[in-house]
Amino acid sequence: MYQQFADSEMKRFPEAWQLDQGKRLYFGYAQGLGCLAMLRVAEETGDAKYFNYVEKWADTLINEKGEIHLYELSTYNVDYVNAGKILFELYEKTKKEKYRSAIETLTHQLKYQPTTLEGAYWHKLIYPHQVWLDGVYMTAPFLVKYAKLSKQDRYYDKAIDEILITAKHTRDEKTGLYYHAWDESKKQTWANPQTGQSPNFWGRSMGWYFMAIIDVLDELPAEYPRRDNLIQLVQALAKDLANYQDDDGLWWQIIDQPKRDRNYQEASVNSMFLYAYSRGINKKYLSEHYTGLINKLYNGIQRRLLKRENGLWSLIKCNAVAGLGGNPYRDGSYDYYVGERIRENDAKATGPFIMGCIEAGF
Image 1 (cartoon, rainbow, N blue to C red):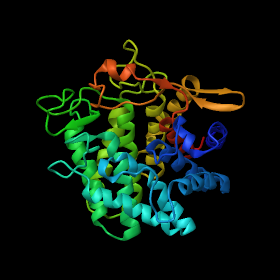
Image 2: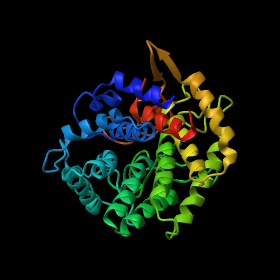
Image 3: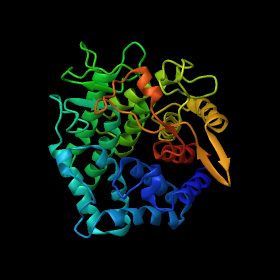
């Protein structure tokens, strides 16, 4: 399935900047995620067309000086960093120095990215004092890749800090689920005045976080300090999430309120969990007893979220976007999350679906 779906994406979006239904050439985090999946397909199949698809995108975005098109350091936006993950493999395979320069640009941003008092990255400069689960995926796997490339262990440590500090402030002890975000200042309207936590368990945010831990573990040296802490964390997350898998094998947009009015079985959270559980088993971070959960999940995706039309495979019921704050203000309420746009073939769902199918052998 993974290659059939990747081919459908490339036919739908002949240029990688079009992934996530993009309207302009931009170093976007969702396009970066889709391209990361294409690099995995290239690795699995040995077919260069998938690698070339990604390289062409990078070459149109990064000039010979290593400057990234439309990149603005002054925004301190961690979303930029996610697309940078593809540059490590591109640099390794092509030896183009502009890719290394772009990696250094993004690393420079993280050196000066504003943080909470404990050192967790603010999501963006316009979201002061706020740590979002999404941001952990954007930054932590990039940091461990850079640690490996530069041979500087402090970047391993920073990635581990990012995961553990976020867990400390977003995990709900009663359910084991994670709130979407935490406001250290407790000043945001969406923030709990006592804890600073946002009010709901948004599915995709936990998908981002679950994938982040798995991908960081992949790059950490086997005996690295606190590696066991991450393994314990991801095992607890896998166990607690399993309690919320429904009879169809799926999870919902708001995970702990299935079948409530307007809630729905959302494609990106299910694709991200397919990847994280499957990769976790393959790398022995998670027990093989989750194999049944994965099969049930994949069958649910096939029945409820996957369709084929005109020879192309599509994922439906993708939440287009969700965030907090901003203008108009996003309050993190139940009504907000279930009221955001739903569309098909969002790269935040299709990329993890491709990678999940690779890991699960579908």
